[in-house]
Length: 477
Ligand SMILES: [Zn+2]
Image: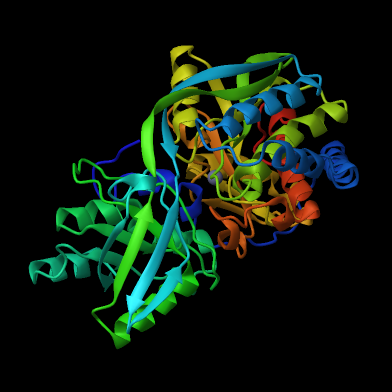
């Protein structure tokens, strides 16, 4: 999906990640309904002993692996999800056609710095949506001097001084380590990735390198979607590992004539059709009201998408399955929704929301997990109306460490339902390690802590249960 300018769209990429600092506090337990207290305990006991979510995620990563929209893995993931959901005893499992997905091919990628008569190889990865260097995989790439900038303002100033034309622009503003919520730090650095090529091309640059979006100093380049907006001059764009960003910075400080040679084979070949995968469990007396638990099934292609968002996908499946396994009969109709193609423009989420509107479906609550499998901390809500309506359940889940009920966005996919009357929520987790893995070759099953994964599913399940079992929602538990 293309966007018009440097800032538009970044919010949409990052809905939950912009959520504020964790500020939930333990509050004295009010009188609680012992049935609900016991059921929440049963959810946690079942989740932590059966370890079903980790089995599913291991299987998804091993048998399907990377699943970027339009890739063979994308189709395999849809098949895997449908087959797995079919075994869980819900009423129906079906797919929803999602058209207009960008079919992007990564191709080869390499870069070398040339400085003081030496060649130094750099760890890079094409950014999603980037075009190739001249001639693509079969070409010779390009070579140019490098100009380091920390902001678009600095870029504009250097361009006004005639210093950008014909150069490779190197965006090297790090994520700010002082944020406690690393998503907030990500949100304030990712404009370089999203709009870096768009802005540099306006000034005649020939390519961009973007410091990877992580607080870790390592050798893994991070990919992620970028946009050319309305720019016709589509210059190639690559992420560079933080260690090599530091190395390039040092070279440029010593020798401002340092050049980089770069080859990217990346290109877009058209669009394809993918599918949202949906399992539906019909309610009893309020079946026209819909409750959703969701994550996105697609992933970037460098790793196997265990954290982003295999974790959220299996947690959503598990959240409903736990209720079913414990013999709960919901009042409302519940769905697991595994969204197609979040990474390349929220296409599955937008299709789901448009379809709901068209069919005049009434969504009561939708919760997404798309922040990795860190230890759960609570829930982030789309707005104050949702937070204050569900805050009353906090005493039931506080003993499980879910202290934060905050306003700060829900999830990128369920957020598309905004304006349709549903309470929208996202699972809030500890984010300290998430950007070590996010969009890299490191995003693999080995990065998942099984207990933390199951705790996330239990947290979602508990909120779904409390919401549905309190019917109508009482003013206090
Ligand atoms: Zn994600």
